[in-house]
Amino acid sequence: MTANTAPLALHPDRLFSPEPTQRAIARRLYAGIADLPIVSPHGHTDPAWFATDAPFGNATELLLVPDHYVFRMLHSQGVDLDALGIPRADGSRAEVDPRAAWRILAERFPLFRGTPSSLWLNHVFHEVFGLRVRLSAATADLYYDTITEALATPAFRPRALFERFGIEVIATTESALDPLDHHAAIRDSGWRGRVITAYRPDAVVDPEHEQFHDALARFGELAGEDVYDWDGYLRAHRTRRAFFASLGATSTDHGHPSCATADLGEIEARQLFDTVVRGRATPAEAERFRAQMLTEMARMSLDDGLVMQIHPGCFRNHNRELFRRYGRDKGADIPLRTEYVHALKPLLDRVGNVPGFTLILFTLDESTYARELAPLAGHWPCLHLGPAWWFHDAPEGMWRFRERTLSSAGFYNTVGFNDDTRAFLSIPARHDVARRVDCAFLAKLVAEHRLDEDEAVEVAVDLAYGLPKRAYRL
Image 1: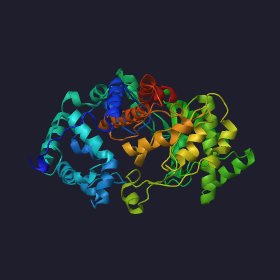
Image 2: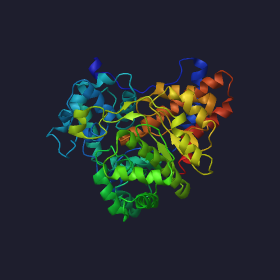
Image 3: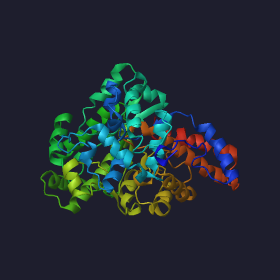
Image 4: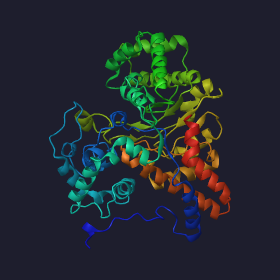
């Protein structure tokens, strides 16, 4: 058999230590959590899938087009996104045969060797579609036809897959301007699957967002408030947050360039807001406004109970030409050095000691785990550490996260795993990887006699299931 038609198999001990004692412990731990329900408290799947329950169109539309982990790698090797049928910023798309786009992925699948994308995709191919040969140029059409034919059957409709995957709850993430029609349709449909939203106000909080001024006008219309007045603007956020909560939201999410927070006096805050809405803010003033708004959002969380997430430290849309042609979220978000100790102090001084407030912190700057984030979370009752994110939600990144945070924050100041994905079928694969890595990590502690195995059993269950449910109030 040639490499192009080599068998596809998933080794039962993948991601476990080759050392026999640790491997045996990891096997036992994993057996106890492998089939736990999936709690997906933060992600970016499309709620329309679950609202309409319409069949997915074909392999390309399901597995390639929505997954910026996949097409960014192809782009890095010179593949034009038009050739893959990726939607453009203006809503148009190149006229591309989806089978031809799939062949591009298949021919270049060796690019993904050793990456988390290969782990996730091979899991999908093997476990979801029953494929038993590797994806390659020679098997491209077999894959495309097998997957596309399966998608036309009732068993592969979105709701059926949701249930097959054992998903207990999944959170999508919507702009503050979203009417949430799909979430309302899900609620009214009688289907028992739990799909909730999360409040993402970046477009009406970031003066440097390309849609800020148009978004602000729409924001006022939706909330029925004068959002060009500071008090009206804050009331509009409260109104929209309450609307999101009425459709299941338990959290907010904030994708700021930094983790800067501020606690300005009333007069200063009003003056800064006036500068922002007049379009006169300098970059420094824009940063200060974002900082103030994180503290304002924290104050609102004290009232409405929404858990607050911050995903900072990302230079978003780094490729200017790609952003111009295709818009946001096309794989060009690049990590930045990020500081937390001084940045968070104004917010924490204001609300950090108030019972009931929860702030979940993420980072793309791994150097901060041991130096800043774990010590902060190991002290402030409101702070919890989100899992390894974006470039770091690979087995190596998950392991580094545990190594660098355990001594200061323990396991119970973290929030388990969330998949943060747009690629629906990768969700069980991603959770499986996280569960395997955590079991391997716990097995090492048991083998070193730092943890008894009965304790490791309890921690494994909490990391996979209990912690995300508690942290996100699910």
